[in-house]
Length: 117
Image 1: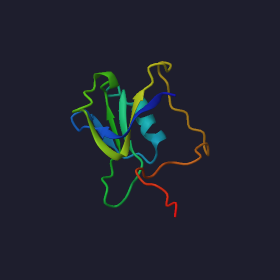
Image 2: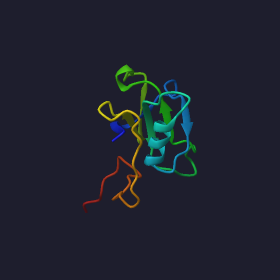
Image 3: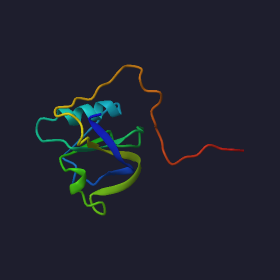
Image 4: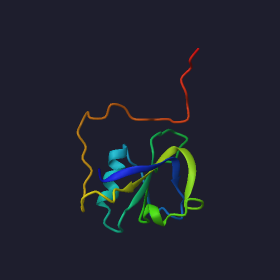
């Protein structure tokens, strides 16, 4: 894995975000971060859900390392986002692999439960 999820239900604060883009899937966002040429992308936040009332940009790229973040000011609670960081144990130049049809499911909304009644 090139990137690993480190925080669920949080996004990067706008002062940490270097570039915001629209990505159709988590894999696309991860690939954009891995292939970024204008800065070393070490972290990104990704919003799974999309809709007419949500901004188009759902992939927020940043160059800070997770260890350099102040978790009180550099991340913001947002249940629709998760934060991913570059895997420090991954190989240099790691490129995300995507095998068509390999995803069992994709989470589109969090914070909800199933009705047991």
